[in-house]
Image (cartoon, rainbow, N blue to C red; front, side, top):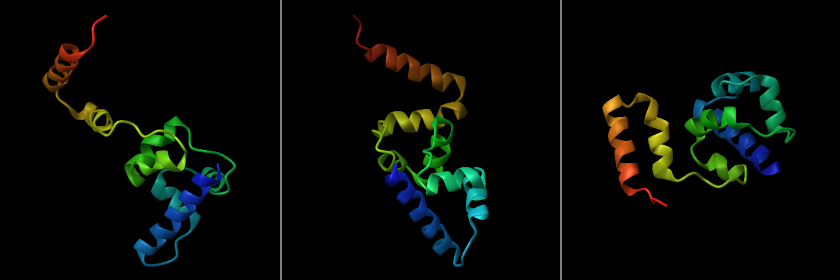
Length: 107
């Protein structure tokens, strides 16, 4: 679990540097959209982010979050489609489903 704690601590330092001044953990947790106690647990290696926070973290920090958690990265193309699926119009979703169906292995 130390790998993610190191990762999130590093991101905190980088975030402060990007903002040009020292920022509090309260401000960093607000930036991340999580509670201050949860951030502290991550930074101290007490807890790891659950599935509910993965999308949020990946949106902010990218797929390297998976590396920090020692999890396999999702397929980049599939991840891209999934990340944008909600915003696609119904006809585009149908085209994608049709293409997947066309190339799916049938048993």
